[in-house]
Image (cartoon, rainbow, N blue to C red; front, side, top):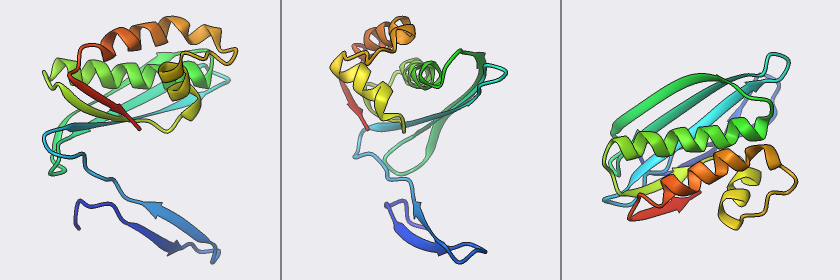
Amino acid sequence: MSHRSRISQARGNSGNGVQVIAWCPPPYPMIKVNVNGAWKGNLLAVGIGVVMRDSMGSLTGGSCIHLIRSSPEEMEAETILEGLKLVAFSDQSNVVLENDCKTVMDIIQKRDLKGLWKIIPIVEVIRRHACLFSSLHWK
């Protein structure tokens, strides 16, 4: 399978169409960091996964951690922070960081808290880490 982005339609057992979007590599010489998390609200349990790949699609690093956080937004901010920590440890300076939480990404980029004051400490650490890179693109 090519490492280029592909969008296709797949059929489930129920006959409903499900959109499938494949991973898209960063331009050379950048590293792409994909982060994601899961939050179990009744336990406040968080699982975070980070995958780092180069422009050829080769895995260059990854991590997973478990935390306790009180909201999905805190969890999403932590995923971004863990991704930045991993790539900083690898000495890469040109980075694309991809996350699926628009609310938290908007807060980081635009400094608009949208009433989510609990994530301020995490966002401030993210902003300090972001300054370590020559080039950092958010997706």
